[in-house]
Image 1: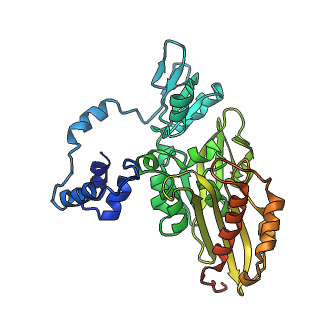
Image 2: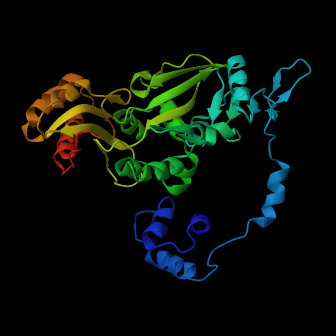
Image 3: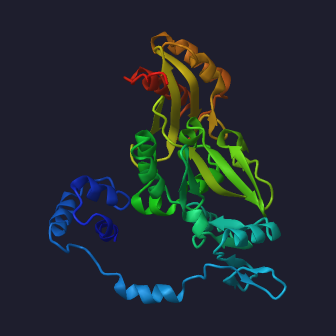
Length: 370
């Protein structure tokens, strides 16, 4: 099925694309060379593994949601469809932002469902049974990416796959972090806003977004507000959102030719594993010195966060003048030492320091003054 999906998009994929498409299905005891060879041979033919979806179109149209909300005689929004279980749980599938906002104000404890890569695990492993579930996949506004001269506006239901393609050229390190996030089926359903809202201490997208100065558009009812991502978390899996408030979009600055951006994830397995830590850094290089430094980590604190003491230490320095002992001291002052299942504190802190040194020591092109 993964190969069939691949050739719908890339009719004649190369070996790397085939291997990547199978990455969530093959165990690591062998390279599965015959399967990959067979896929390459099959895809050399004009039709290969291509399938026709024409027969499914009529069936899909039968369950298509209307684009406009349904109103009662009193003018109130009726969220459709509403499915109630015998135990009283309620499932709703709105099609507009106004439906989402109205329902959440009335039912602020609702569990929002997008890709289900997190909620699905809670249901399956912890037997989580929320009273209210809202599926967001039918809300067009949440699945769109907007553009301005300076920012991308990424809707809350945009998948990681779409974000990976969006940033591939301008932020290749960010794209690589997203590629290693999980297998193609996971990346195609998981959402950027879902990763942010989940708030895992080892969430991979957040250090990249914080280093780039990303902001969140939050909404409750008809009221919107903008919050910098590095001000969003208040503790482990805790954030500033009020009851009934939700993430409408992520504002991500577009690449600036004057700025350098670097990011890297360290994990026990290189592919599809939980982070020991992920670090991201952006800065300007002027007269050979580091300016406007933004540095963020996951895995070092109860939530992903910036490292202001390290930023101050690096600000205005020549890369060659940055001392590893000073970095170690700043890391020790910034974070509480914690051993975890994925790494000891000694390892994490060493990696945190070495990634900074790597980010500033690699050759960079100094921007010319405007």
